[in-house]
Length: 234
Image (cartoon, rainbow, N blue to C red; front, side, top):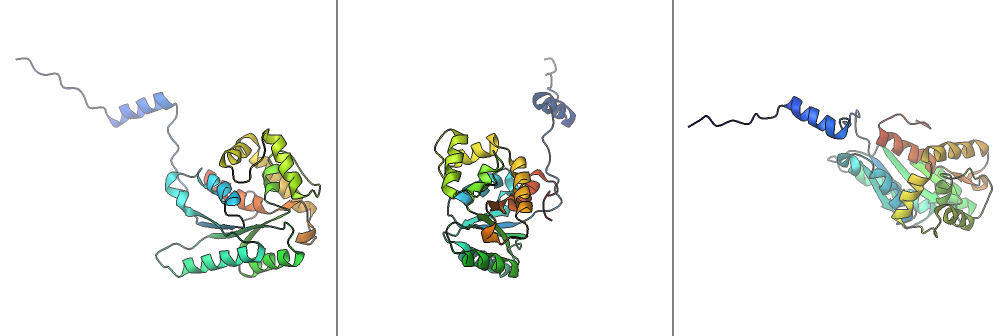
């Protein structure tokens, strides 16, 4: 009886060559030095959380949980208070890593100037990052498509977004969030939001319109996602 031909086991080098041939390049290994933990507490319970969860979904799977997003269902000062409370509660648990960045996301809308300024001041005192917008969060979306510096009412933001998207803008639509991110230009939005901030330097936040500090939070998240340095702020 002749010897049975034994099939040679593929070596690691063989598998490497096969993978390279099939995919063109090796998958990029995540080599970031350390994890960062973000807490984002927003005014809305769906619109802003859906957006930030969409961004977090771009992280490697094992890092998605490092971005915690909570919809407070409240406004201005109370959003900041909620962020403070959640940060402090986390600090009580030594088994959990502390948040590296804690953000409160809220809008001026039609709330009194006093409330808006109080929220910003409270965030500063408590070392909470404030991602406030005047008038609303949707300004950040518009900046993906155009540089808007006119003080329009937030209802005009909706009309503009509907024109750009070719469908009626729905605040809670994840599909539209994806379209805004892919069909718009987030890097340009960052640059234009920064330019708006420079235009309003020295003005009271309630008088700075249009204006959004959401761009700094997005810059931090995108830098974390891309494993690169931030472009704005620290």
